[in-house]
Amino acid sequence: MKIEIWSDVVCPFCYIGKRRLEKALEGFAAKDKVQIEWKSFQLDPELDNSEGLSVHEYLGKRKGGTTADGKRMNDSMTAMAKEVGLHYDFDRAILNNTLSAHRLLHFAKEKGLQNELKERLFKAYYTEGKDVADYSTLVQLAAEVGLDADEARKVLEENRHADAVRQDQVQAYQVGVQGVPFFVFNNKYAVSGAQSSDVFAQVLEKVWEEEKPALIIEKGEGVCDINGNCQ
View 1 (tube, rainbow, N blue to C red):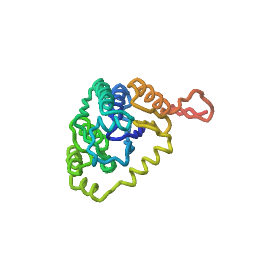
View 2 (cartoon, helix red, strand yellow):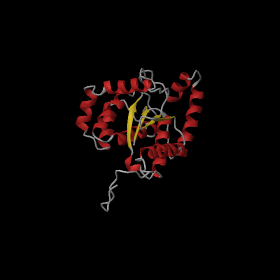
View 3 (cartoon, helix red, strand yellow):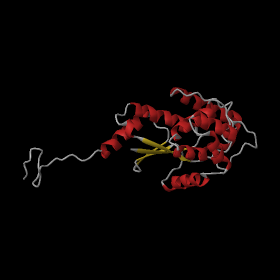
View 4 (cartoon, rainbow, N blue to C red):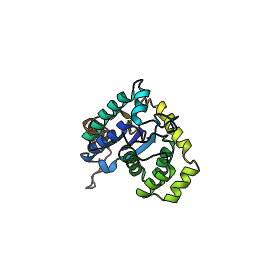
């Protein structure tokens, strides 16, 4: 079973959705048959940190409100994250463009470490206040999950995988993604948003049942059994 997940590194619901899916997978009998692929989606492709805005101020402005409004929204998100065991520290978060982080995730995919890097990037941004656009920081994070640091730096400096990031985003629009996280199971069933673990569990079971081979419910002619009897 393949699960494709469109998300951004700086999407708070995406980290929460990851945890809720993981909880559902814990109780899923066929979890070793599940392959997860992270797809790139930038919520603000034009973002840079030149304005020096805090996350609270940025969110408030984007929603047409004040810095205080932004903080209230982030406080609510922090409480929601806590329910799934995550610690969000928006006061330390550094706003920046996520293109390079997404490019590095495509590199990690090639090496079989995409899920590990995605988790590390989430924690770096939401808990540790790291700049996930800074090349030195990204190289360090890549090395921590087992990627070659020198190769990771070359990927970043040579602007590799930028086309793959754009293609993911084009594909997102083609399949109707209007917000993230967005989960697609076996290219057939979609779940939009950080739904409950129960919802994910139900979808996992439904998809798995459909993957099982059909049972033989009628015995007809033209069959040989294990005892050598043919009819």
